[in-house]
Length: 210
Image 1: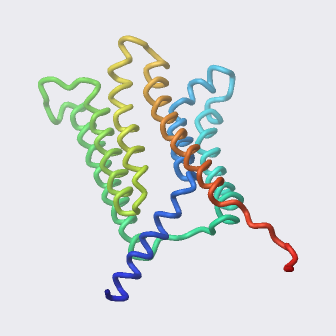
Image 2: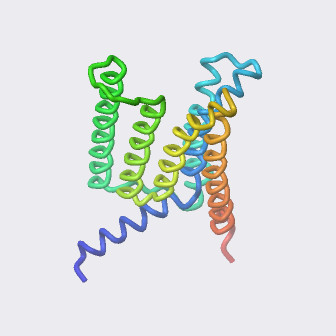
């Protein structure tokens, strides 16, 4: 077996281990909770703060979670240079795809591109495809397969909210699908975090040797 293959296998194992603590899962769950900002607005939180609350909470949880939960137990592994380059390439492709979708929607609404029937769900479906595609690629490249589930749930929630709107109205049409999706991701993260902490207790420092 060649050393190159061994190094690649080792890098993949280290990379996968970096996601086993549930920190990233909970972070993505908190980001998905951003769609629940209408709840915060209804209880009196100003609009800018209600929109930023969950994203800021997600970033803070990621930083402090990795520093005070993961690092003392197993350290923090970073992806290799080749993996980071691939991830950047996928992000660029995703942004390009998103721009194409946005331009297409604008052209449709301006009447430059004519379709016999353009329901409100057209934009939702395009955005859904974007999220599912970009998160799927990122999850595959980084070996973080929860991202596939994040993309799928978020992508499905977008057209689902359009379907529920005539029956539930605002804000329940958004809160129900996105809230359920966020709950699933947060639940997975909480379980993984519990298992990680249970299986990786912090070693006592300064214990005298017999």
